[in-house]
Structure formats: C-alpha cells, structure tokens
Image 1 (cartoon, rainbow, N blue to C red):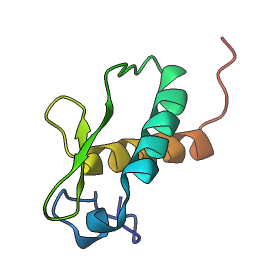
Image 2: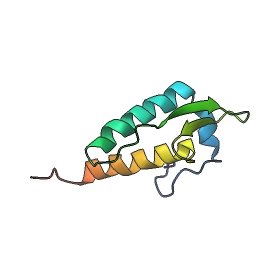
Image 3: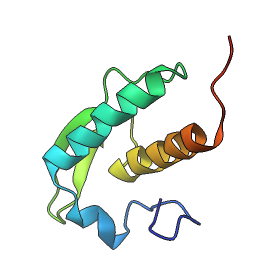
Length: 87
C-alpha cells in the first residue's frame, strides 16, 4: 500500500521503480513467511527480471510486484490488529 495507507499500490506507481530485484525477493520471502500461518502459499512466486522501465517483475501468476506489497500490507495490518487465536 502507499505511504498514506488509504489505497493499494498500483503497478504503475512511481514507487515501484525504486525497488531492486533483491528487495522484491526479500519481500517475497516475508510474504511466504507471514502468509504460511494463514494457509496462503505461493511456492512458485519469485522475482523474474527488471523491465526496461525499471520495475521488477514477479512470477506470481500474472500479478505485478505491487501485488506482493499490497498482500504484505494486509497481513501486517491483520497481525497488528488481531489477537492470537486460541486454537
């Protein structure tokens, strides 16, 4: 999500050009870790390449890297606001 946390990050948002391939790979690692406890598994998600426009591509279905950022924002928000389950 964007810095104002009110709207998702779009694939064409300027911020997406600032992420390097290692940074996006690190975000994918975090997504794998945080998502696992919710049953959200994307074993094939990985960085693909850096495009001509400077944005990092992610093999995550046909989703752009901004999808990774938005999913992480949701998981982080949920972890901050929800009490742990007793199950």
